[in-house]
Image 1 (cartoon, helix red, strand yellow):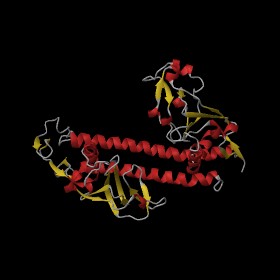
Image 2: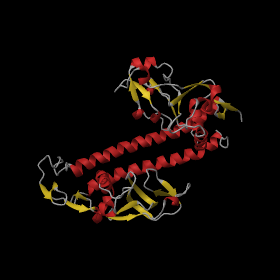
Image 3: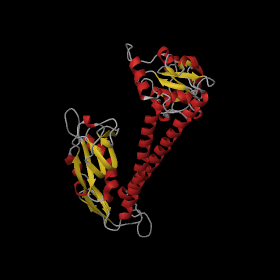
Image 4: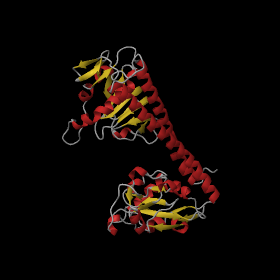
Length: 394
């Protein structure tokens, strides 16, 4: 298979600078300024991490002005991560931590290059080569000498389009998840915290004069027919038993640890609906339904009644910051089982199962979309090296 180097199909640009170098400052709005943090390893940039500069500053920093279909590469920090500039990102500029690979579209498809160099083994290779310098960094010489299979342009486009379609499905599901999560949180706040659930006339309960009573446990007023219950009354609270080495690369079941990423393992212990809380680290909270296993510092909350599944998850999200601030331990802070058992929440009496079912239905849709994202990511990771090596062709 014919090989070419990046420097043979593109112009490599770096040596951008910061506004302060030319006596300017960042702005609160204006021209997008792409920082290395904006390159997260996904096909397109994370615009939430942009800075901003004035048009005057942008015009002075001519060398690092960006163009559509520029392939940006992080050359410090997370070395070798890549993203592609879109029309929507422009006008934009960048700094010395970002290399610009301006490809010749007559010679190579920029998305094909992105997917080829996104392979896990190549990302690892780039990091290893860069780490050999005194200060780990990816220089233009190393970047320009990176080889890739120089196949027919039509075939490059087919490969790029195929993996782009997978990424688009992942992105659509991710957006769906975010919107559903906003809706779940909105309903929870409106119904269970503000007590503005619809009364018998379809009006917001509290603001329409609904009767309230004082609850000593919660230290606040709640609707007359509601009551407070502790997490210990609503959920069985367990912990995982496994250590971090229990994870396997190609495991069948989810393995929940205190990290944000869900790992895989070969055996399960838990089966059903559960709320999972990392007992240390960043105290992240997850929902899951199905067979899974858990790390020894991960709390597993199993509802005695399925209807309490989502409400406890949302209530725990509200309390985790205060739990973390009051957590124990001299070196690594951690949350105890007693901390969780002592949390109390306001719950409606009989006849309100509709509220629970609505929240649980939305949560179910989030979980289905999340599972589809996971499977698409696994499919992409499985196919990418096979397609790029020519084992699978279109």
